[in-house]
Length: 426
Image (cartoon, rainbow, N blue to C red):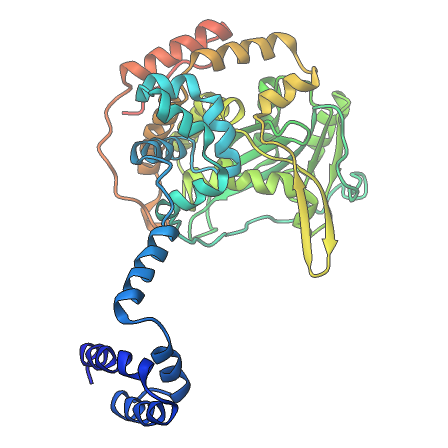
């Protein structure tokens, strides 16, 4: 029986049922249940309710009350999505302060009007998650580990098991990220990643293989780029760290050298997180095994990427966590960039901090993000296709553009160095 027939039949007997006697109501109800195949209780409620015309009016009124007015325009959400993409897809909690930090360049690039600017600054993190939900599709990938434990000097390097509670920048964690692809055989590239515990500042270098001298040289080079003095390093038990070379360097510079427990990744939780955000999200799980690839990766690590991550992208730090029943509740501080944390603590090399602060005021983060994307495209072309899980289709990329040359000129002018001189990606 069709729905239309049931509605017509209900409409024809509704008024008669309302005016009938109790005995007649029973007969009408029996007939209604038999014809429409309704449950008796449902049929009683339907016949005692309002007629169809009133039900439709009430339904339309309820729907109009449920629909909330549209607060944020499509243009506002479109700008929000472009900022989210340029900032390397941060979570909404971090995206909120990014909008305020990047506001001068957002106004210049998108020509913000008063209402759109107001909406962009007023949107909440939860609303960002709702409106950007369709864009948040990420591919799941496997993680390949390649750490071989070092057996020498373990008794001479103390294990650090207590929680980090430092008040001074300079105490860091170091780890290597393997770019071996699907095969761990042969010689391939590693990214040596180092992060400061207090500020979250990150420096990264690429090495071909993980010999102790190459890794040690990368660590010494990264030390020159930190805007503060390195006071301590904490590593895993890999042979690239547990060796005489790195131990001698730390002793000569009075740097505290500690290591985590074997097979306990939580002992190096800070650097494990940065391995994902600063390496894996950029280069994926592809295999790189050529000197040219290492050269181009180091050019990116030491120039645009370090400035983009440390000057323009805020991050949150865990303040405390407590167990409530079966749940663990965590409390984080307000997201801030590593440079802002360093300035707030009032420590570090004042000259370097002033230079970096001047750079942040001059360089457009959208241009910086575009240069990073273009360089990553060039580097991905050098990946070993045979031993990489998946390679994106190569897009045609032009040589270094005028925009990139202008950014390099601004960086070199402020820092007064030729370290940031661009190299050929053609």
